[in-house]
Length: 120
Image (spheres, rainbow, N blue to C red):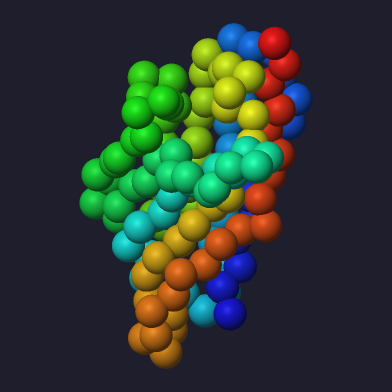
């Protein structure tokens, strides 16, 4: 079993900043890709940003230049620094990890989600 625990969500005024964290633990052999997704009410879950174990990053167009994803591979932890937040960023943010479990079975784990609310 692999668990992802997110933290750092909350309520912020437009233009403000938040930093999300996600730590993976459990039966992990390796993690190759970690990412953040979000789901706003009435909308589908969408990719926000992702990072490989080599540090390559990928961002959704709406967040480019405002959000920065980073990771600490030794701690199996991924971060999302969000600045210049907009009301449109309001959503539940989910952490995702893809890799191999200790019994070398592919793992694709999700966190429970953390709410980000941006007030106009």
